[in-house]
Amino acid sequence: MHDQFEIRPLIYGSDEYRAALALRDAVLRRPLGLKLVVQPGDESDEHHLGFFLNCQLVGVLILSPRGPGEVKMRQVAVAEGFRGIGIGTRLVRYAEEYTQRLGYEKIRLHSRKTAVGFYEKLGYRKVGTEFLEVGIPHFEMVKELK
Ligand SMILES: CC(C)(COP(=O)(O)OP(=O)(O)OC[C@H]1O[C@@H](n2cnc3c(N)ncnc32)[C@H](O)[C@@H]1OP(=O)(O)O)[C@@H](O)C(=O)NCCC(=O)NCCS
Image 1: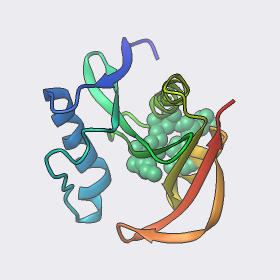
Image 2 (image 1 turned 60 degrees about the vertical axis):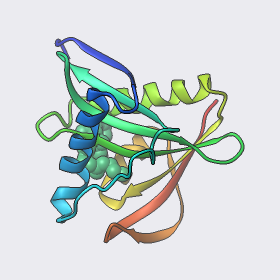
Image 3 (image 1 turned 180 degrees about the vertical axis):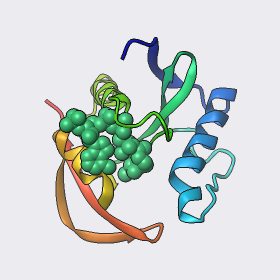
């Protein structure tokens, strides 16, 4: 990737956070005929990370502390037209370092069945059986950070 990129936390409630909401809605909800609904304050204690390509927000994810030593990674989304060029990989790797700096050792996530291969390449493993979330098949996946 020869363009300028930056990966960093987004401030909850900021314009960038609102851009992240729009991206999550466009990537993760509208293609399913759904709309992202987030109540004010709902996500204030989570970590919102953004990938900026030439100053444009093109990738997002959320880290949500859950239980001792563990975070849930959720809402991983790369804008259409920017996929397959390493943005998701860079964002997840950054999130793993960020998770460790926060003092957590394990990441858990719910992967769409269609994205399992992406997470497997990053060292996540499936646990349990297939289940439905937002009406589509998912698997729970985990990774111990070393
Ligand atoms: C899944 C997603 C986050 C991956 O991000 P990305 O920037 O496209 O991924 P990368 O370019 O870093 O791909 C890394 C590797 O994973 C592979 N990969 C990417 N998406 C994949 C998928 N859905 N299934 C299997 N492999 C995938 C790539 O081919 C690449 O392989 P390579 O290293 O052998 O070339 C992105 O495609 C996306 O937002 N998809 C729509 C929303 C979604 O499914 N989000 C996940 C919800 S659980």
